[in-house]
Image (cartoon, rainbow, N blue to C red; front, side, top):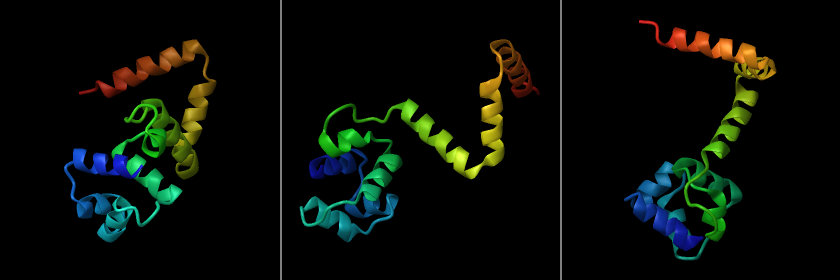
Length: 117
């Protein structure tokens, strides 16, 4: 994992300090990790993946695609909405319960609404 972190940091054109700042860590922590003197917590790994849109399996093991799947992001966003925004959650649940015909009608309305000048 250490080599993949270094690779990611360099691909992003970031110094250890800039990389650390993006994920809320100290430069010293990144330096120690890259030199094999520290381990990363699951939370830190998750923060790095979220910050740089990286697939966690790739970061941990080198397997799979490096870039994160859009579907994974969508699922996490929906989960976060469910926790933080009760009105949005209710709207999503109501949409889910609509018949196919009502969903089509909803999207016709949304398209007209969004294209208003």
